[in-house]
Image (cartoon, rainbow, N blue to C red):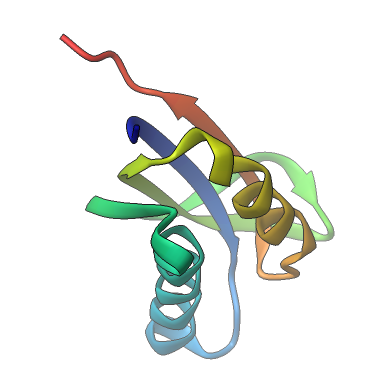
Length: 99
């Protein structure tokens, strides 16, 4: 049974500009939708923002919020991919309220 989750991502600012950011977002969406694990229902791009503190010598990050319905058994694989990605500075996966 799939449940509603929110994925908050802070992406590394790259020299590729908007194309590089779009590729990173597409990659994360592919990880979520791989092997029928889940489906991304909404992507909210907050854009470039100043970080509260430097992370890997980065002062700015690109913030993205994804809403998805994901099978809970697939979360460890998604988290593993997020941890190993060099393009993602920070991430957070939170289960959404189901009213």
